[in-house]
Image (cartoon, rainbow, N blue to C red):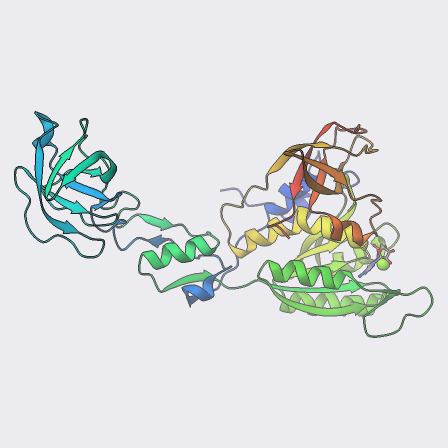
Length: 422
Ligand code: AMP
Ligand code: MG
């Protein structure tokens, strides 16, 4: 087995251009350095909602547990009708869901049965009540009854001993129900990721304090708090750190000691990058990219000690876009999710004209709406990377690939829906 490349070695590959890094390549690069956290907890299933299974769940039972009826009708022996479909059978009892018929069914007999009722042993088909005629206990049937019709066999949905849910599955409402249906009361899940974050910038003020001239409120820590909490991470907010090398060094160091992941915003753009770069090169192994995308051009990724580090740009929209395009999948991998769900790109008509230069991927904020029974998308308007309202108004990203140039109104574009992701 060849030894995996270190971050520095990988970033020295021939075709690697830190000044124009395609989105897909940056994502693939990051993903090669990620593996699920170690550490598990056994939880009652309700508490496992939103967590990731760290073990395969083997079905202890057959599902369904018994051969049963899919319809309200009569359980019959097909051979009784084989020669004479018009033959009348005698109803000798009833099988309710949860209250099986106890006797034996012989030649010329049938049993009234309801959905979920156990099919008596010698019967091999269910005729739905609409295809039969009852005259007291004498039942006649339409022609064409097939063996196995409307019968649900034991284990046909899931066999005892088969993998019901594989390790890596996110526990959602359907999984809770499935686990309960198997009688499973607790499961082993990966421990939550600990994510530490802070903002950098002399201009930043935390809410609650008045602003002096030239200062702005720190919003990135709030969007990060929201995005990380939605993803089920344990979050540790270290506040604002001034653009001061000694303070930053301490903050990076402290964060890497307590977090599985460290996320910062600001301070990785040109100008600032050089001294942050020196600092991070001293503390760990970090690569700095100019991603061929808009917004979100500067991005840093690496390891500080054992912690994964994401240095996001400072602009509020760039933080959210780079989080969703790079950090989200990375956190899913670290959380143990496997396989990583594919985020669908939907093709829809764009009713706004968009100016765009080829050579980079753009993530415009869009509003997907329904008009005359057809889904269409328009932009949210001004797309500056500081306009957080554009994220708030958006329900999708309009994703314009590297090769795409200007988009005329009426052209088809691809959108990534935010609902369910954010
Ligand atoms: P930087 O990447 O540090 O050069 O920041 C780029 C832009 O984003 C600047 O206009 C910053 O003032 C702004 N910015 C940086 N961090 C934050 C933050 N936490 N909240 C709001 N705006 C920020
Ligand atoms: Mg800054």
